[in-house]
Length: 155
Image (cartoon, rainbow, N blue to C red; front, side, top):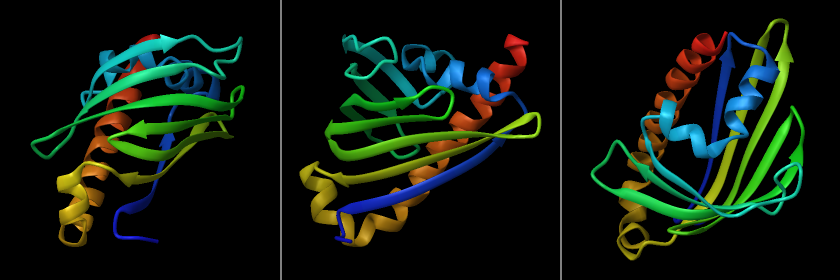
């Protein structure tokens, strides 16, 4: 793995059904309503009936003083269990949501396998890699908290 490549894994257990969690994660345009780090999601191209082929532009506000923007194309969907997308732009790589039931709860895993492409990130990655990991953790924790509140409100 190069200094500019990251494989970050986030795991959540959400006190909600897979259906409830799927509904929220499979509608990224609504993420800014409940995920504080997501500034904007714009649908650039619609996908098929499962969303495969959809392209979205995402803009994220991080815990550090910078904004990340990239496009994400949905490349694989297994309804109620998996959404995989290919990121391009300021980050290049794969993002994969995996959901599975755990009794009445939902086990969520997010794999983020990307390379940074911003010149300053590339130049400083050998020093900042631990900071970028921490930043990702903060962004994902904000998402977990927002998702927990969102599914509770939807009940």
